Each structure stands twice: as structure tokens, then as C-alpha cells.
Length: 73
Image 1 (cartoon, rainbow, N blue to C red):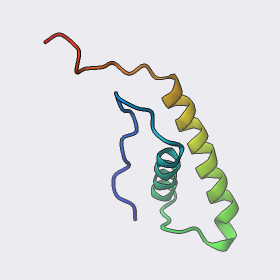
Image 2 (image 1 turned 90 degrees about the vertical axis):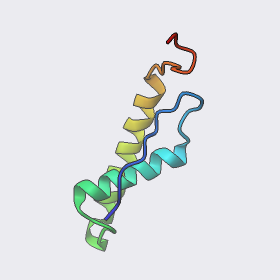
Image 3 (image 1 turned 120 degrees about the horizontal axis):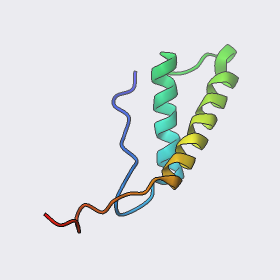
Image 4 (image 1 turned 45 degrees about the horizontal axis):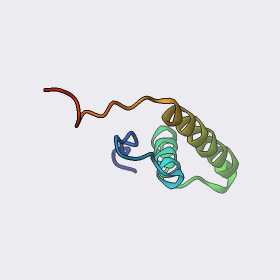
């Protein structure tokens, strides 16, 4: 089973499409309790990964990230 899902919100850059897809894959694997989907479930598994990737990208594109390195202390 997959480990912890990687953080994708960065101050200095946006997450790449590949990073987003990998996180979505980890999430779907964890929720579905699958390391790999079976032939009977491939379509549902792949559609879930695509849907989660799309939602993650939309959310990350719309988040405002505060630069804590320049904040007053």
C-alpha cells in the first residue's frame, strides 16, 4: 500500500501535472485499498484518478499561498 501522500502546495512554485497525478493515484489506491486495480476495475480506477487529478489541479490553481519567508517576525 502507498505511504503518505506528498504535500503539493509550495511557496516557490506550482506543483507539476506529474506530481498532481501521482498524488491522485496514491489517494485512489489508499481509498480503494488497491495497490493495483484488477482488469474488472481498471476503468473505474482510471476514471477516479483522472477526476481527483482534475480537482486537485483546480484547487491548487485557485489557492493563495502566503510567502512566510518574507513575513514579519
